[in-house]
Length: 301
Image (cartoon, rainbow, N blue to C red; front, side, top):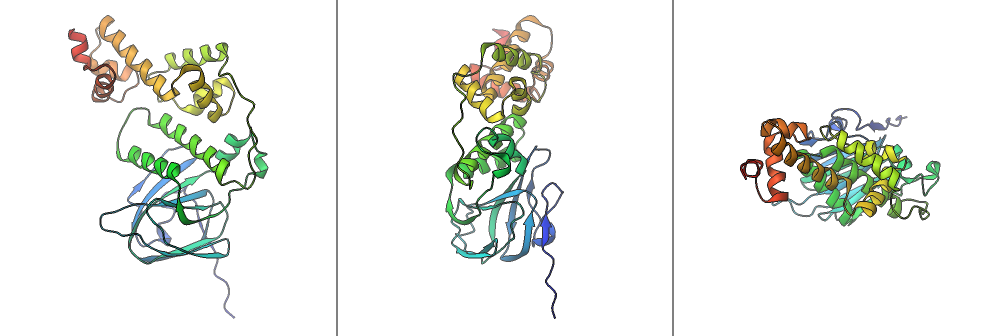
């Protein structure tokens, strides 16, 4: 009698978590992002053995000049579906759900893994956290918002830009609420938040940002000051200020750089680091984009 094979476990908290089950290792991988992990793969025709994930996983197909739309089969929680897999189609594999699939051509795709606690923390204002259940989705239709989040996160991995962690925090919050709205077994109830942030909380937040401009500020960190979830903070801050926290912090950094250029003897490189930019080139790029001149031109004028 043949004994059943044990189901493999893929935990994207671990380095190279899926390498043992795939023909080729990932060609791009995130590191240090809180609650989410992104992998980019380029694979030949293959079949992956049955496995489960410790995190919620979203897979998204990518376009390539050398690869046409591919097809294949996917088993999700014991159910089989044949998939056409056009560019931008997504699959959702909830944590602890059995899964396997095959591809009939070479393929490029991304995988985004989310900690289940992320959905619980962000959805706690609408849904009983213990009742949050993602609905498995076969890769049979696109989701424009999820695809744009994938591509933006991929771009962040491939570049070195200011405010990365803040942008990643914002995107994972948007993604979590999108999943809760559209792919959750329990419909979220409406939030009671309105009228923006109170003046007292807004003053605390602005003071904190000004005092920590030199650091890599995160949305979770700033939202904690107002004692509300990051999602609601993002919405209420924009409602109060007219711009996102990321845009506001960038403005404050540029304004402080302007002040230091006029009232200090620091070099442009020193000012860049002091106001939270990675280096002089990053300061120059955003300074010119927002003011139309470089820091050197501004100082000379």
